[in-house]
Image (cartoon, rainbow, N blue to C red):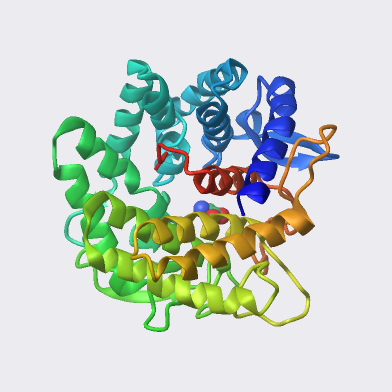
Length: 372
Ligand code: GLY
């Protein structure tokens, strides 16, 4: 295992040194003709805009190479412009700012980065609905009670804010949200709803939506991955066993489904076999969560999760990693959504695929800190 992990880390470093130098003034999202597209220009408030600086910070953490640090700081100068877009920022301020500015603060002690991260935490905390006991996901007139599973990855920003400030309110909000979602999104069989609509006045369950999955009641794979990683992170920050149990329950479901397709996830575990639609990003995210579960269970349980993570990562590396330094992205064949009636794409590189793949390899090398 170590040989493969170290070899893959070297491939990441070899390619990212080149792409870091080539992409100093953009925030990549997907790619066109092998080169990153710039979502800072098209939408500075886009939810994925923190992943490029985060990826460069991760490489800096693992190599201490100053080129990565300069690249990350340059990307952050662009990303800081998103704070001017108050009306368009939503719960994904966690994704955007925690693993970018928060990682910067962890690695360099930058006070400016810490301040920005605290602003982001306050934006997220401000979305809390105290009657409903949930964090509102998106903006807009008709979704005041909508909660999406992805938010489980945003709430570590709140745990961090309590750890930083000594003020427990952020953590209380995060835990109320995690407890609500445990009841409304995590199904008894370990599969997960993507979108749940709650009564904004009472928090009562109203209905579910298929969201980025195949249909209502299906099982959007990246949503399952957000739940695995999100709940184990809630466990790491709180020590509450119910969160680790939730992460394990979804992990068992995920592992049994992904084993049936050679450890490469389909976009939705409950969709027709044809067309064959896959989402490599879901595999990379789930692998990160599985590795953290392995790090937090007993010796005789650990291998169930680590072995599954390795099988997923090796399958992705064997079939879907592009190591050519003439092209920018690494992980190919990610998918935005199942795509019934929306214009979201299939089988493309997406920046968070590269980020989570690299984070999983970084973790397997035993590196610290944890960025979330
Ligand atoms: N958080 C949105 C997505 O996973 O596509």
